[in-house]
Length: 489
Image (tube, rainbow, N blue to C red; front, side, top):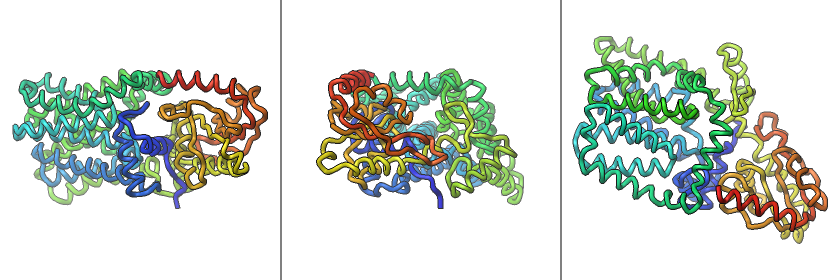
């Protein structure tokens, strides 16, 4: 049985579903709507949280096959492209978690499909649908804007620029704008938090990504399926049969260069790979058109089955012990060691480490809360340092009848209470008391209830403390200043 639970970001996104709005600090609103539907219809389990992610992953595969059809590919090309995508470590890793990534990927794939449908049919309906898809993409993840711009520039470079000079494109753009407009308004009402989020992301994470790292990651993330997408990339640029779709190759180059210059994370570009898998399937089918069934089957197996060796490293399909053994094997024979955002190597990937410790931490918060009398509980607040801790308490705390948690990290700032004025505060300190020391003089006393002990948790060592009789004036002055600053970011 696997010991893997909710991933840190999933807990945040589920919490967003209980605070529906047209925007949040990190993401547009689409993920929050899905979270609300998920918890209302399917429940609050890990399995339930990942239903939509799995469904959208399936749709990505389906529309990749449809792109092959639009390119002129047959059954073998569809089979090769779709299986290469299914067995790709990149898509196995990004396609099951309840995060905007997989939904963003589908909008990219749909954008390409609808654009090809319009080129092949000249029916305006596909441009209108394209506008709706881009609008939905912008409500899911802002990277859709980069991809849309790359496609437009790709069209301008090629003879297909004529597509842009008609009123149906303007109508499509208007549809996208109308859909995206509520989030634009929300951003301005909240002082453009997307700008602050990107600055923080750049300074805390992206600045550590070297251009050489990004390039090497793109060559590795799809495993042996690299042979398929590189073939597709070459066919897009050089095949006379795909000349009218050449703009897709230029768009890939442009988005690649942009993310390279911006020190983007490797998964930011994943949504562009399905079109390359599709053209790769088409190209290999053209090469092997005279070959027999057995040879074609061998080719499909060559570019898919070896990737199964990488699956335990990106998809939690085994127990913890088996997964750890897989990482030791990968380190010894494949020279692969997981490196986190701290640029250090660890026994597990950061995503895996972010799936441990949450229920343990919440249980210790509940222990602190229920150690108090009912009268004391009425004058108790819970505070957590980061959004993962706050999301876990918000999610798991329901079964312990805990009051909702406060935090000034991430989108929790948007609905944080205006003051901390309780006689008792249960504080989750991600520095195991290090943060408390900065305001200990304002407390009557404090005691440690416990800490996260799960050895593979990224939160290992996070402490749970009970603060007794904090001085409200001093503590609130600090809290309110921080709250005001965070809400302006």
